[in-house]
Image (cartoon, one colour):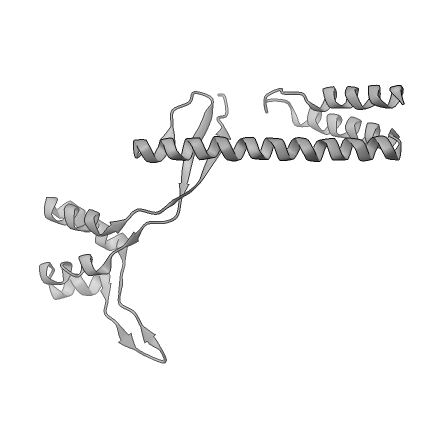
Length: 174
């Protein structure tokens, strides 16, 4: 039994390697093959114990990550920011796409020529089913070049997307 515990502890040390992702692919493949060989050599009870211990560790790490993301999410919202500054890790918020309040955009109907309006606005129409009015926001956002009045109107009509997640990505060293 002591030998099994030693094997388990050795395996934990071997797989708990915290090296950065700059390892070569071949080394990773070799490590996976070595791990697989060690797992294959384990007795059932030891392997089951290791599986359970791993599952418990995953649960603890998942909880920790959830709490970290919760704090980072609130910090982004407090700062009205989209990302954090970090030299080695890209950490940013993931947002739902912004939407637009069409009632506020309807002011554009009075400000624009009919020809320009046709280019970016489709009125409500009845086909097989009722098709709601729509604005092509790629084109509407181009109106911001016309000055402060348009910038304010379009920005006021923009409903910022909800922050849904925090993402982490290690920056590649050059």
